[in-house]
Length: 167
Image (cartoon, rainbow, N blue to C red; front, side, top):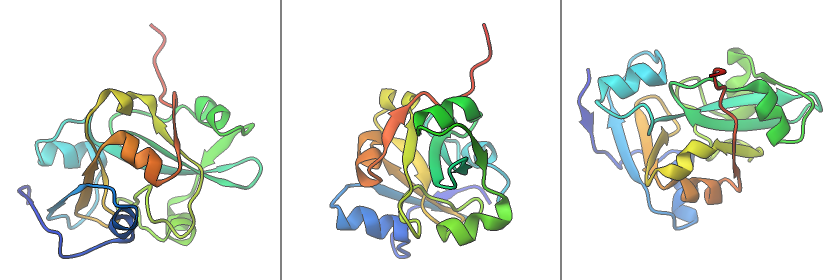
């Protein structure tokens, strides 16, 4: 366990979507039996937690689904998230419902290539980076790409969605 390896043999829906939009990206695969969390994966692979982004799926008060992409070590601010998509409130989709809603499993959920493209907000911290790391669409697979390319690919936007401690 641990060593990253390059592997483009197994295309996921997320990768096919990027290919169809002619967006350049790099694939990184690694051995992963059980998903723990993004922070553990970043540390295991010697990657920056600030560059590694997780995908969280929520359901709004209106019944619609919304996707939020934020650094793995940060927490989603539910009030800011709701405001960013024009909802009164949002709540996390239950783990058992992730596959039904997105087509992906927990730990392998990419903001790209879901069953349906939901409104997506990427935390504004991504703007400061040349490259971010997101799930490749299955356990043990990552996509490295420019934040602007991610937003373009998912027709998303940047927003202030991370919980910040009061200073």
